[in-house]
Length: 329
Image (tube, rainbow, N blue to C red):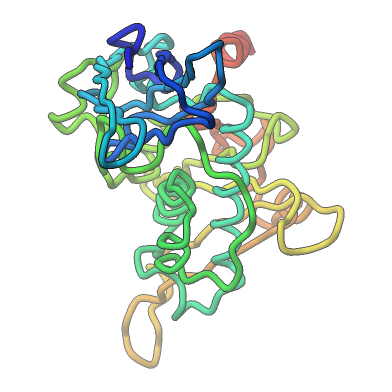
């Protein structure tokens, strides 16, 4: 058994070919063992007397041992997965995090919007305790959308229903060189030390999500795709930043409306009179029409509103052409 090439980049795209010689009548059993999170078997085909298996890299660098044949008499080959630290858009997001295929981008959008909207229909006591403001809702839905959505995940999510959506294929949280750190926390292009020196964190407030994890699409809501974010800065509240998730069509309501969803966060200006505590805030879901006619004009997502920063797209979803188009607007 041999593999060619013996080393590829851990970029979620590079492929090596495993060649197995022998008199196997059917495709031999191939195992990636405990390091299955580092690569995947794309296909196994017969070529003359040999069997060929295409092994696609994941994004975790390291040595991968591949075994083929009967467990008691297995052949072994080693594949070296080299780190790929490129950041071709120089936005601080490494290329290994970007979802390059339309399949992965669509899978992320479906899960992200479903997980966010699902919280609106759950009683407050059943929501994850971490969801206590607009940024927390976004962090939760983003992180969970990047998991592998298997039975173990479904048990932990405790959702009333689990949709039959594909998971992202390129990688699964937290199996990347960044580990549990998902959110870019500083300016500048990505450098290898950022993976371990605090360049990425599990926590990010609205300002951090806006500045370091998303790109401007435009200041017209018609540019928005499901899963994009709307950002606001309210000057009458010490420059506080706020955010909403653009859902597009609802995955729970059968109608023609487009929706946005957000968590209001603690209502600091309205203490609960009975207990003296700060009100916890609530989930809100508005149609685009309701938002455009919102009684307080500072919340309307229109270019004439100076508080509206625009429609933003996650860095992991953005292509080079979209960045250039947004900069030209």
